[in-house]
Image 1 (cartoon, rainbow, N blue to C red):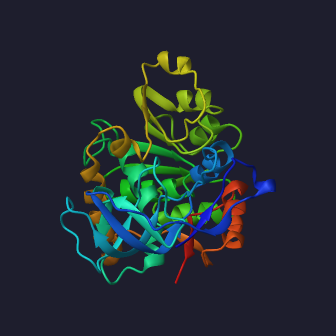
Image 2: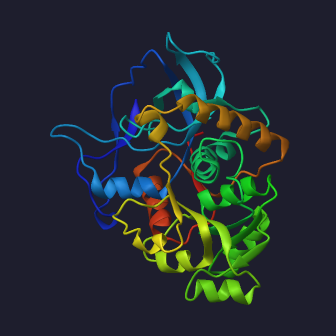
Length: 331
C-alpha cells in the first residue's frame, strides 16, 4: 500500500515526508483493518515529526485520527463488521493512519452514522477525547463544585470540542481567542464570554466581571502562563493541561492548594487504562454530531495522500493560527 513516511526526525524547513510503498498492516486479534478515507491533523504530530526518528533501516508512519471503512476484523473484536463506516484514534506506539490502510485496536474506534461524512467524522476523535478526559476525567460529569470554566486556546480543536461539551452541562464557559475571526468561532462553539489570552489575562477577566474560575483547561502555553492561571483560579480549583510535553514547575499552584490534571489521549491504550471507554465516548459523539447536538470542527479540507498535501497541513499546524481542524480527504 501507499503511505506517507520518513526516516529521520526533522524540522518543517527540511520537510522529508515522502509517499512510499510499505507492506500492508497485519491486524492483531483485537484490531480492525480500516481503509482510510479521511485524516485529521494534530499539532502533536508535528512535534513527533520533529523529535522522533526511525530505527536504522526503518521508517515512521504518523497519524492517529481517521475515518474510513472496515475491511477486516480480528478474532478478538466485537461490535464491528466488514463494511462498517468508522472513526477513531489509535496507538502512538504503532504505525498511524497516514496511509491507505491502518490496523487499529477496535476499542478506540466507533461506528459513524451515514449522515456523518468521513471528512466531518475525522475532525472529531482526538479533540473530543482529549477534551472529555481533561474536563470530566474518567466520569461523565464535571468535578463537584466546577461551575465556571476558562478554556485557554478555545479556537483550536481541543478547545472547540471542550466548549461544546461544557455547554451540555450547566457550566459558564469563558473561551480565549486573540483575533476577531477566532473570537467569532469561539462564540459559535457556544462560549458565554470570549477574552483575549495575550497580555494581562487576569485583568481582562476582571474587566469582564469575572474574578476567579473553578477550572482552567489550558491547551497551549501552560508553562508560560502558569502564574496568570494560578491568579485566576479559586483556592482548591483545578488546572487541566494538555500541552505538558516539556518540564513544568508546579510550585505556583501550591499557594492556593490547586489540583493539576494532565491529559494524553493515548494513555488509556498505552498504559493499560479502560480503552473501551474511549470507543464509547466516540460512539456517543458520532450520534450527537449526526443529530446536530455537536458540531464537527472542520475548517480546512485538503485533498489527497501526497507529501505536498501533508506539508501544507504541517505548515498550517505549526503556524499556531489555525481554527478548528484541518482534515485531509483521501476520496
